[in-house]
Length: 151
Image 1: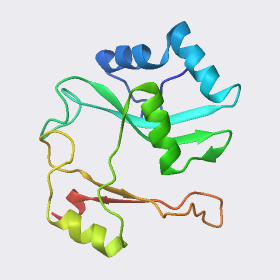
Image 2 (image 1 turned 120 degrees about the vertical axis):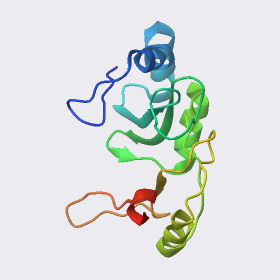
Image 3 (image 1 turned 45 degrees about the horizontal axis):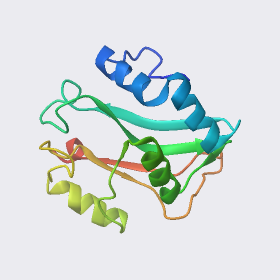
Image 4 (image 1 turned 60 degrees about the vertical axis):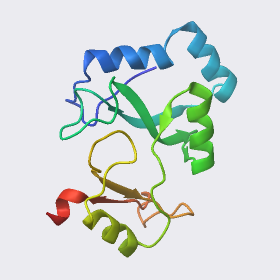
């Protein structure tokens, strides 16, 4: 079990690190991973959120982990699988805000909406096609639309 920040130099807050250890480490959690995934390599992608992590609002009174993507044995998982894994480990998953076109997502973000979690303003949206798509180099096609891009 390894925990990484967004960059190689990223430092995780100690409270968040302790929460990640509580959720994912230890013999009990190792057994849960083994029961769920066997010996397949698994990468859970998410981020820390809550008090002391975000600026400009509060998503949660405590620091926690929210799951937004999962890669199992080299394959990115569909939304249903991500939700199932989050439920299995008792963690939050990023909510679906809308299903629609890129233009609908841009129009939504331009309204500077509140987050669906806590009292913070939304930072933006991450968009994924309903069917996994790759570019010519084999990279996933995903878009991030940020509120700050329209200020």
